[in-house]
Image (cartoon, rainbow, N blue to C red; front, side, top):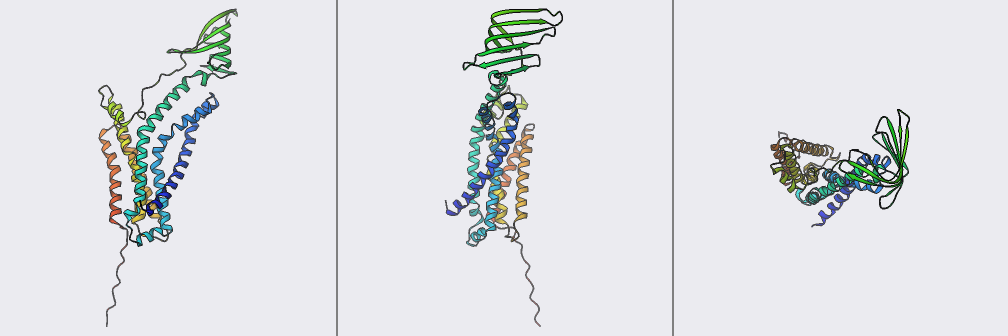
Length: 374
């Protein structure tokens, strides 16, 4: 690789990392707001909060990567023009294709990394996130029951636990049950153990007292027990869902789509996602070329390259918008997937064609006619 390529690539990498990390940080903050309630209200451990929000980042990276690369490439090449470095390169006889080689290399490198993230990183992260989400929603010891606090379920049952032992045993338990309208039941026990069943969680109490107050008659009864079971009932303990679209690799998506038992709607969604996974990495190369092509083939303007930059940005937005539109439409109409490939490869072909052709925006000045000789 020539020194010129290395010189430009270093600047693009620096810009890409700065822009990419900044955008990912902002999106991480917005995504993390969804889980703040779990920390403040339900006692989600901080380490689990960080882990769950971090598992969303691979998905975010694949969306932001082409945009960050577009911004970095445009900034670097525009700075080369502002510092007159690009003019010197062209004056030395270096073609636009050679100057664009650094952007092309970065686009290909980012595309290859996105292939790995889309087909390995995201499915693994989504699977892990699904497992953690299931554990968080259905684990009483971590989420619903906290030491030294009263926890109310469905508004008619309240439980208090003094402390949890390392093995999961709860000590100092009080359960107030008001599910029946005509009586109030209060159960106190020295210890207990939580168990999970298909119909809901239960707590096995040991060495305690059960007191019942009839609200209508005012009659009070009490009994002691060695072992007693309190059933919490169904409090929306959900079952693990099957693998979603994001949790499958490309081969799994196509396999599921071809299965006879797969509903037609889901089969189309699987195919649309598979085609999107194939094309998404290529947009890194497309956006890198959109960012530099206009700057390389346009005339030098001392007032700046505002018009060229605006055209490049609008082109990028148009390609991105069409990609999102076609990806959504392909979930309903399978033939739209072909338009996704057209939207990707046509800009790529046009950029290579313009770079190979050279400057195309040169305004030809009219020659002044020489005055007639008398």
